[in-house]
Length: 380
Image 1 (cartoon, rainbow, N blue to C red):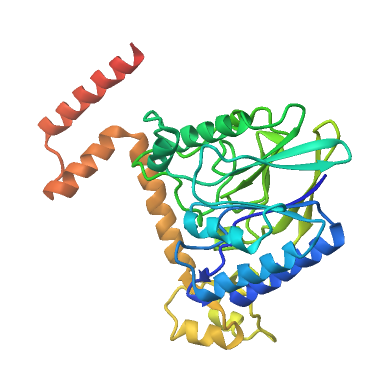
Image 2: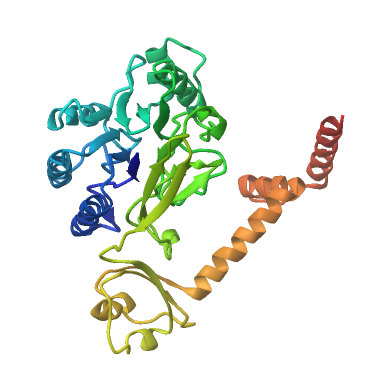
């Protein structure tokens, strides 16, 4: 069986208040082309289809049109789950756009959900779709008050799904979660509403699955094992993703349940890039670019209307800073890290911040005594 895995489209999203509608159109066109070229049996969209629970009409129309196109393909089944950015009920309603025998669309959590079972030349393949859910909803769904973190939610979902997998079937799990050991980016939203809660789940929770199609993290990667994969987002949503190759994941599921995965590169309409140099140098370039641009000026003195001048060549420049300011920020961060490693200094800084005066000798001695006592307790 051949599977095309994608996720985290974030339809309706903006990049620093600039619309990404046309950028998404280019990507959806490339997904259409990949389906035609590689002829997958199954398309998986592993959550965060939209960027927010109330997406704009343009985003809803894009997904509607895409679903109409792909469900018209007689050889293609589709599996979609809600992610943490989506409104679960809204995703669930998308099922009315797709034939029931070739689409599995899961929005709200349901402990009794059955897998989609597809037959290939080697026998049955069961696909369990596990939509994202917060802890409070999972406690109600599974009637389990012990569910207190994302790991508990996923564990309950996988346990319920495993009970419905036909004997001898190969098993695909689709989930939206943060698996321990994976690399995140700055643009992912927290999966837990519990203050200080642990978001990550162990890859061991998916024991028994032959392929795990994950959404949530925007960097394409495998985690824990070769068959547990994030497809990554098809577009970059922050400058920390500069230089990352965006892609779809094409998976061939073999007779014995082993998988062979390859990446299908995507070419975005606009890249995210950083330009560094003096303002006069950057504005004297022979040609500009429509990419999303972050500018770091190396000028030692403030320049007159730098962004206005930059946007003559780079109309989508969205961020500007000076290199010397970044050095100052990095130095302050370094000092902060050192303070965290030195509890006495951290407490002294706090006392001075609150009282406006450095700690007295009595304060310093008391803090030293308490830190020593704490160290002794830890060692014991």
